[in-house]
Length: 230
Length: 409
Image (tube, rainbow over all chains, first blue to last red; front, side, top):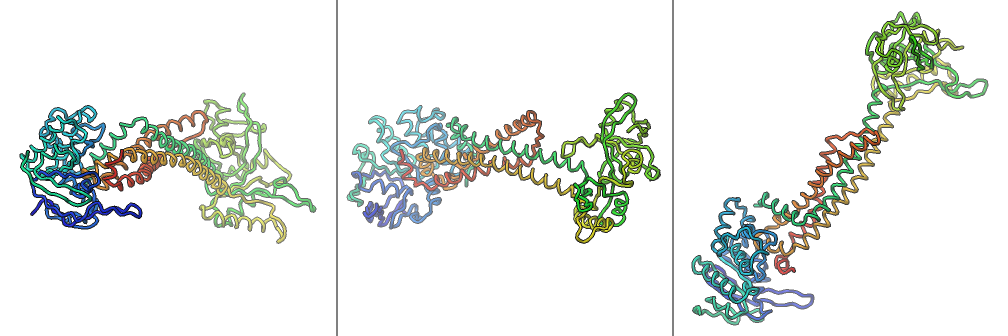
């Protein structure tokens, strides 16, 4: 069974009289442990596809099976539970809670999962160590560099043992050196923990870290190529 | 699976981050709650005072007063002619079934002298029944005996004020005082009662047998006449029928014709007192209602701030949703924030309300009563305000689209 399977997914936005077909019959299969870069010009539908994969948005039609379960027809709270347990998000703008320590940011997903405080703390410490930020637990986001903030975000994505990490332009706000460090962290997570990584990027160098590249244009998949890592 | 303690921590942190704003928001609730507490304390104090005075007069009381008489076609002022007699009083006692006690009253003002002390006070000629009518026990001594009543003995009962003014520290029982130069033996002292609703000192009085008052003190051209007849009905329910029975009986006894006006009036004291109590009750409610308006305004202030807060924190809400916060996780977070604001405001308001009631009673010498009920009520109400006015912003927050919320700058 594939980890992710989409069949003929369509997403139509109605903007007044105009209907925008953001996704047209997208059918893809993603196996566990893949490292995928989704690429395409802006407006190609790659972000919409990420939102659908991330259970933040529902497709207008089509089937989306996550670990064999149809999630396209779930309600808000069921989707929230799926996001909490199965998906980790890493954003371009980090999206950490301000005025909240790194530790508490990492604990957040477990808070909504109802884990007891002791277990939360233990797991959060472990996740912070994995991303190389042990000792920075009490720092607030504004006391951390961009790269460090993104590491906190990755720790937050990891902490509930989600099988999938969705990263939307994770290096968009970082300099080249830090970008490479972050990408190496993704590669390590993918290779060592077999976490499926799906990232959206328009930078070729970043996409080089992946093993499969999917190109979108005007809402359709125009190419889907496997490549040995450069 | 909502993690309540953690949600509370999240909410409290948000409030701490915006200290000034939280304090100002609370101010509305603080003012509202303290106003409610103070106003209710003032109103309840007034009511309690009236209630006490009402109890001091006695319960289920009727007062029969002489009415206007007509003499040769000329109508005289009410009460100018004595129309009531001890005989009327006795007849009411005997024949009216709804009546428990009857006490005739013949009163006047006189100088009372003991040794080198003198005091001007009201002299009430009445019977021992008066003590039952007024629910007025003796603090010392004994009431009049039937023999003393019959023989118009020169004995008297003193009110506490008279005792204080004439005797100082001396035990008055058995002492001789002179009223209008007539010597009277003090046989008892009336318990202290305090002021009546009109502000008169009820203890400034001397009771003598009505017969003695008629013959020795306030003798009139009409022997056997009394000024007032006090009546105590068997129960509150019997007041109306007692009133009717007395009127019927007196019309018959006074040979009042079908078309003639009554030459007496029956007044329901209890009813008058109840009316007074009712009006203070209305006043309390009114004060409370006005104060509640400020509490309401405080609540709207909370809602206002919470709405601003939801807009400001749209991105935070988006992050929380993406990470797995469910509808109620978000709602509870904001409701708890609003609830915390209103509850802290409520507690501070209660403290301020209690102190300002104390200040009111000190400065204006107005009795204030802070009932636990009003505290529980305003605390509960401020909690309700928090939930009520917090719900809409929380509801709004929970309905945000996570994608849009994440994009919000």
